[in-house]
Image 1 (cartoon, rainbow, N blue to C red):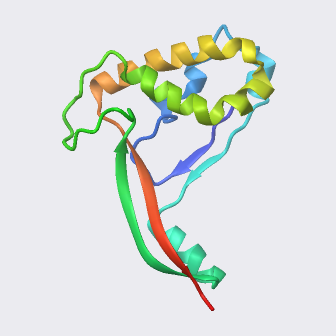
Image 2: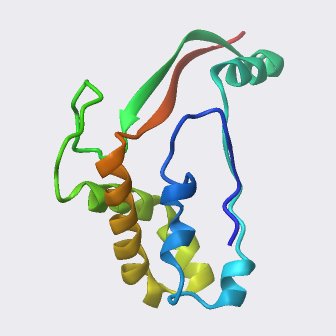
Length: 145
């Protein structure tokens, strides 16, 4: 399995320590693991602006970068550690909601519960050491005439 992450972002759930591949040993057949590739790209604000400008169909009304905690239930504004025994599971559920159909079609549904349980444990250990955040680009566009 290759989850190619090219990003200007500081931390993200599939960064090395929380890569879902770390959840796979003993669960997924080696051949299936090696034949899976999921390239992921996280653009910078400048890259998004460039693509929209080149396209010439829209003009940017507003663009902003936000950071959001991995755990969707952790709404603390500061960088202090929010202690909850469910943080890893909360993150794993979010990742599962997005990736389950793709993973199920390649690896089979029978492994998903165990895979995401392990992934939740790995994320929980990571979050105990570091408060990680997603970077989210939000923009408002106007269609050009």
